[in-house]
Amino acid sequence: RQTDRQTARKRNVAVMRLLCPSAAAGAHVSCCPGLHSFTARASNLAVPRTRANVCGWRMEGESRRGFDLIGGRDWDLLSLRQFRREARLRYASLNQSEPLRILLFALLTVFSASASALAEALDSSLSDPEKATSLVVSVASFLLFLRERGRRTAQLVRFDRESMASDLSAAFEDPLTGSRKSLKLRDLREKLRVLVVYGDAETLKAVLKEAAVYRRRLLQSQVALVAASSDGSSRKDWEVPKSARGGWLWEATEKQEWVTYFSDILEAKKASSGGGAWFALNKKGRSRASGLGAPRFDELLGSRLPPTELSEQDAPFFTELDESVAAAQGRFYDALTNGKLEEMRALFSEELSEDVSEFVNLGGRLDPWDSQLREGSRPQGMKISSRDVTVADDGLEAWTTCLEQPAGGFGTLLATQRWKRKESGGADAQWTLVAHRTIPFSLNAGAMAILRCDCRGCVAGLRTLDKQGPLDMPNPASD
Image (cartoon, rainbow, N blue to C red; front, side):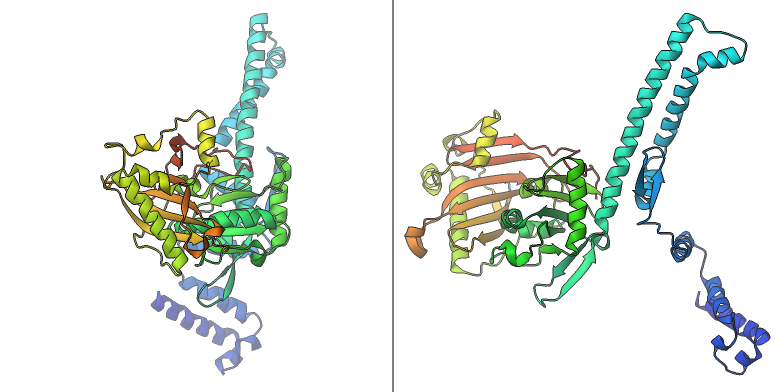
C-alpha cells in the first residue's frame, strides 16, 4: 500500500508540472486553481476499494451533502410516522421476509375485495358462495395485514428509541485523578452495557442507595450506571453513600435532552415520572429490559446483565465498621453451613422482610430455619468469596454482598444481606440480620430463580421480567 501511495504521489507531481508550471518551480499548490481538489481526489486512488472504505466514502459524501445517515428522519408511509434512518436500516437488516408478507397480505386483501368487479370486467360473474369466500379471504387478509403492520411498527418504535438513547450523553469522573469526561452512549457500544435510572432527586437518592450495594457487581457485569435527573439535581443532591467508592456511577449531561426523551416515552404510555423509570442496553445498544419505578438490581444483574468476569478477591475493608459488618456476615455463613440453629435465630432481627412477605402472599412456601439447617438440606461445604460491604452514612444500616459457590462447584450465586443495629448500643452494638437474598450469578448465563429469607425462614420463587415492559424498550437481545 505504501508503494501504491508513492506511485500515486509521483503521478500527481507529474500532472501538476504539466498543468501548472509554477507548481514545478516550487510554488504552493494553492497558486494553481483546481489542483488542490484534484490531488485530494487522486490520493484516494492508492486506497483499496474494500467494502468498508466504499461505505465510508459514501457516508462521508452523504454527510457533506447534508444527508445524516444516522440521526436523520424519514417518513414511513406504512406506519404514517417518522423514524430515524438508523432504525429503518436496522429493521431492514434484521427482517427480510416481513415486508414481503405485509405486501402479500395487502395485495390479497385488495384482489379479494375486488373479485366481483374483476369478474364483471371479464364478462363473468361470481356465485354467492364464491362472493362469500372472497369476502372471508379479504377480511382475513386485512386482519393479517394489520397484525404484521403492527408488529413492524412496534419494532421500528423500539429501534427508534434505542437509536435516540444512543445519542444521549453522560459524564464519568475518574476516582483517581478527578478528571471528568463526557461521552455519548453510542461511544460505549462494544465496551460497556448501560443501565439508566431516571427520576427526581428523592427518587434517585433511594435508587442509588440500593445501587451502591451492587457497585462491585455492576463492574463485574461491565455496566455503566447512568443517573438522569428530571428536576436538574446533581450527584451532590443524591447523597450517595460515602463508603460506595469506585467509578461505578455516571451522571447524565445535557439534562434537558434526557428529560425530553423520557417525557415523550412516559407521555405515550400515559405514565407519570413521579416514581422514576429505567432501561438497560447491551453492548450493541440493544435494549435488554425497562420498567417504571426502581429496578431490582440483583435480579436484573442475575437475569439480564450477568457478569462477564468474576473475581474471588474480597473488597478492601477501610474502617472498623466495615470489618464488624464483615465479621457478622462470617457468623451467618458459619451458622448456615454448619447447621447452628440457635446461632442463626440469635443473628436475625425480629423485623419482617417485605420481600419475603411478597412471595408468601403470592402463594410461595415458607420453609422455617429448622428445616433449612437440618442434615441434607443445608449448603454444607459451600464457600463464599468476593465479599463487599456498604455502610450507611449514619452507621446504623449496612449491606453485604458475596458470591456463593456450592460444594459441587457448579455455578455461582449472588447473595445479599441487609443489616441493622441500634443507636443506643454505641459503637460496640451488634449487627442483626434483617434479610438474606440469593440469585444465580454465573458468567454470561441469565437466571430467574431467587431465594428470599428473614427471621421466619426462606421462600423460593421465580421472578420473570416482562419482555415488553412498561416503556416498550426491552428486547431479548444477547450481547
